[in-house]
Length: 247
Figure 1 (cartoon, rainbow, N blue to C red):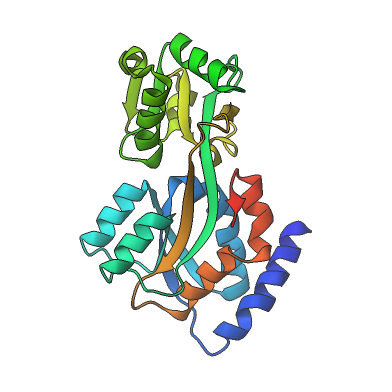
Figure 2: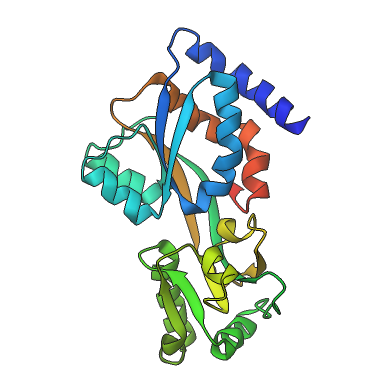
């Protein structure tokens, strides 16, 4: 019933805008951090509008690189800062270009494993020093932010030998036992049945990443409608359920 209500709301919001436009297949470049939410919201959008989504998932760095190299796309959903930079290059339209949600860094473990105490900065510091291995994906906001956090805590040298820069998403590495502790956006941990959230980083060292949506300079009408839907009340509950804070 919740899904039906969301679709009804979506149809009411968007169908008037699309009544004169042909439906299309939209190529959507989306961040790993938004994948679970988009896996729910995408079908709702498709059912209500008749558009079809071709979703390509990756890190913001990977997706941004595709756009900068000239890859065709209709909608981009990744970090707002990267969207803004691409807009300055003329590769993302000025509107609609909006913030959708933010998420902080979470500490993940394999499902069933003992969860370390990360409720305070002192506890988090101890958990990192006691961990056998710590993993996060290279060239991501988490990787950049954790370097600064470890420096701030004065443990950069001690944890460096434990760090594994991953080529796969953190949840996959945790599920396979490749790392003991995974650090990534909370929205990549919460929806995954194979891993568990030990907790977000403590508030005094937490760093949030804002994710947004934008469209290609020349794209079908449905592209703008998708971005608008992701910021609508109909999307709010899905974003929250997947570890994201709607903006």
